[in-house]
Image 1 (cartoon, one colour):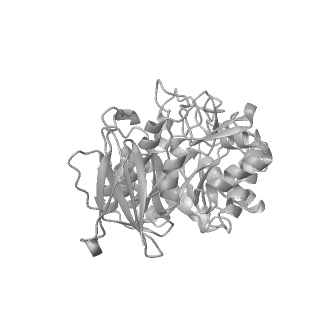
Image 2 (image 1 turned 120 degrees about the vertical axis):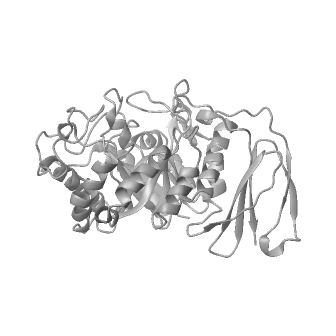
Image 3 (image 1 turned 30 degrees about the horizontal axis):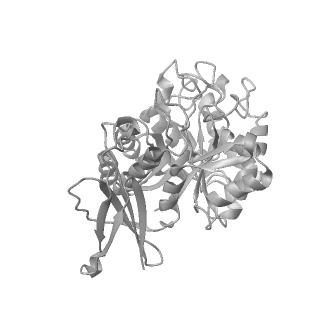
Length: 433
């Protein structure tokens, strides 16, 4: 297991900055310290994303192929870097940071805009792609100057969305073939030659699990590309009707590459786009996805925004969603959602370098699911969700859930059962010492 975490978006930082400094510091401490959730993963958008207050890149000067005008922005210095530095400190320097770009500067794209469908101009070995590869290096270099080094990177957030001209926020098309050729011809050699990037772990895809087999097959079957790749990044959206089996199938075919869940949020689908304070169903949806992901070889799970406001933003295209922690700046308050507490059941009790182990489960009612772990200190952890039927789009019915009696034992001591009753609509973590 690689850990659990969330994303340092502009929106998260804007909300933290809207609170008194000591309160914002408390939030970061409770997310990343061992006394809190103990997050060990942090995602950082490279320049702007939809959860920014505006659209920007690090070099908006047309035709600046030498990147002479590359600069971090006020958003980095006000809303990302200070909180990342605090998180690194509270995690005792164990935080794994990975970056993800939403789009290159508009002048590099065929549609001339970071927003909307389009791809990088020219051929894979051309000037625009060369500049885009160097753009990553400059990003790593500038963050290094601020005391922040990255553990990982993805080539492109949700690269399949770049095929849609109508896409409402930043994106850029990469097909698996395009990403394969970019990695082996430019990105891989360029990063290996950089003191700021040579140890950064590259993850392919960074999109929904329905794409995982095509992308892994086309990229990892090419040894000249695969040698630069460490893992595969997946999101939780549009999983309805797919199920987790493609994750296991991909692992079985490509066992040397780990799978990491890199983005998830509730309230994203059409007709939702809102915060629901205190909603258990959204917490259960997190738990269900985490458990079923991990049962199918996913090594860690990354939430989306660390904090949002009561509207579910800010978001420059009004793509509002929910988050585990909601800030009410007018009252100098923040609220921990059920999603927050669900994340803690995993992040606090499944340390980095734990192993997921078999957990045989016999439940005729189909009310419960569980996952087990062997921890570095020799203890075992079981996380159990007394769940409800998970409908499509992570909409949940809680009307049929009932208290459930659990009898659990370790395989090494089969006659010693621990029995307890789980409340309806609940999650429990057990540690065997």
